Length: 349
Figure 1 (cartoon, rainbow, N blue to C red):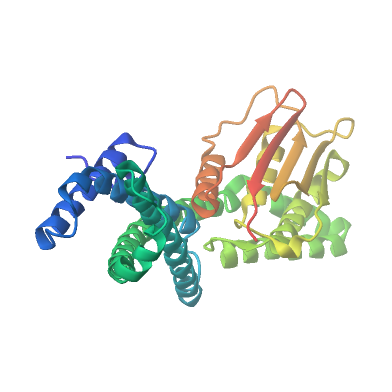
Figure 2: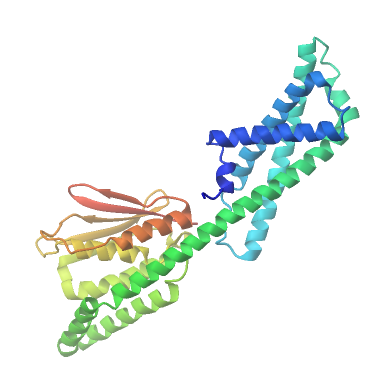
């Protein structure tokens, strides 16, 4: 049996959601008539149902707008502050919207009846405002709590999915960094450098140590400072640069890196893919550039595909795209032309 998704029920892009909200409005009016049968004139019931339906639709729309950035990635204290501030904002906006809707309804009723509208405003505030205020605040409070529960459940699902993707990512990252081919190249480079250039061999070992330390310390995190990721990528690239020298180049042109955060080890995956799947020669070096564009980190390399591509499952790139979606609610952008390959990762403030 297919499970009912509470988020889909309140999704106003679906016709079924509007039908459900209308039925809820109808039930609310029926209950109100049963409890207070004298409050609504029978001839005004259709208009009152429409007014309540418009209110419910408006409240759901405003709730999605106000609570759209609710995320579980924050600390408990920060999450509490965000929820309380958004709840207060939601109540204030909805109260104003509800007041406008009820006044529009009352004016419309008098116009349809052919009566004067001069006293509508004053009569409402003197005679009906107190009861309307209590019922509106009660309805908004219940509705906001229900919506927060739905949003919280969605956030928990996203966090669980992100944890699963992070486990896959950590496993793939560690496998890539301890695979025999990578270790053989690193040990072979160190072996040759120890005899020919001891100082460079020491730098190579330090870079290798920094790479593993960063992966072990940050691989499980959701986000890290962009500057830390750039420093890590620089150390990682030097492992290849020492071996390949003029065959490859990395140009980092990033200003104000301290203002942004990024998914850990994301840039390393892209650089590794570029080196793995492209030809690098002194005559035609592989050039990788990293820059910021429209709050996205842009990793670009000239396309020099190998004649026979190395077999790959592309799990790294697929996993990165899913982690980006879960963490930032945005998509990983991949662009390929005849001359270059570009990947854009959304940044967080």
